[in-house]
Each structure stands twice: as C-alpha cells, then as structure tokens.
Length: 258
Image (cartoon, rainbow, N blue to C red):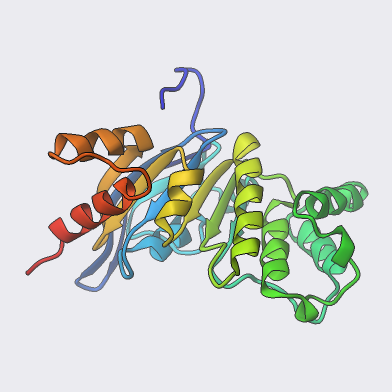
C-alpha cells in the first residue's frame, strides 16, 4: 500500500532487537504502520511475536533499536507515547469482581481521560464493543467472548491512534470469532491496528499488511498483494483460501535449521 509522503506512520520501529543472553528473541525488526491500516503479525510458536508486541507497547525495553508512537520515542517519553496506544495482551487485564461499566471507568482514568469525558468515553467504548446489555454485570460472570470484548473496550476507551491486539479470538466459538473480527474490521477503518494471530484465514480477511517472523527474524514484510506475487513468482499459483498458508509454511520452513 502506497502512502502520501506527508502522512507519517502511527507506529514506527527501527532495528528493534531483544536478546536474552546469547539467545536472540527478535533481530533488527523494522516496521511502519499507517493510519487506517491493519497489520497482521504472524509466525510459528516461539517466533518472537509476543516479545515484539511487548517492545512495541513499551512493556519491555529493547536490547537495541527504537519505537515511535505518533512520532514520540517510547524510550524517551514513555507516558506521552503510550497515551496514543491501546493494548490487549493475550490474557486480558480484567478485574473479574468489577461490573463492566465500573471497570471501563477505571480503565479510562488510568488512560488519563479527563474526568468530564469519562462517562462519554465509556459509553462509546461499550457501544463499539456491543457491551451495553452487560454493562452492570460482573466481568467474572461473563462468557469468554464477552470478556474479550471488555478487553478490547479497555484498549480503546481513550480513543488511541494505535491498537495492539494479541490473539484476540483465541479460545472463542465460531460466532464469537465472527463478532470480534467484525469489530476489528471497524476499528481498522479509523485506527492503526496490529493483530497477532495464529489463524491465517483471519489475517487474510482483516489485514492490509503482513509481517511474518521466524526465529526472531523478519522473513516477510509487505502487503497481501505482494505476498501473493512472491508466492506466484516462486512457481506456484495461489489458490483461494490456501495461498497465505502455503507461503507461511514455505517462509518459516526455509528459516528452520535442519
């Protein structure tokens, strides 16, 4: 996807790396995410996806490299950068003993939403995530699908420019998955979204850009169309529904040592 030269990325990472002793978890990752884009972060287990998300969200200091959110360096101005970020980790950070509306008010205050705007922000987040009918119910009594919606609502209650979602549909039933995917599609029209998922069909439907990691290294970064071209140039013909899967297998197998 091409961009106007005067449009700056909502999130930019340069040479982002994480080392645990001699082990390289993420190696010199580059990333540009623009307004109105959904980027799929893909890779097999242990590829470095969760470590990448933790660094992008400012929850893990990188060994090298930099992250900017809306032009603000995360390492230099952490609070200011994170004000533009909403994050749903793999395990949603929920207080099960609170009612949905009370929890979202708490999340809004943590995100420094002005006191006069908190109620409106909570109403909008609940409306976008279809939570109005469970607003007064305890989070601990909700189904997993509704808890995921609450997790997304806390990530968007302050209307951030960048939203990071780590496996948002994991463990949901088919109807719940469809509802969460629809929500992500809506969010992707007005926000910059990073979606980490193991479900390749999900990335194929929702994502404008794809970044595939294997053993901490970027093995592909680009648009879905570019991925299809690379697949076809490799001597294969993409078949609807399995082109991304076949390309994923090829790229990750290439990088795995014998």
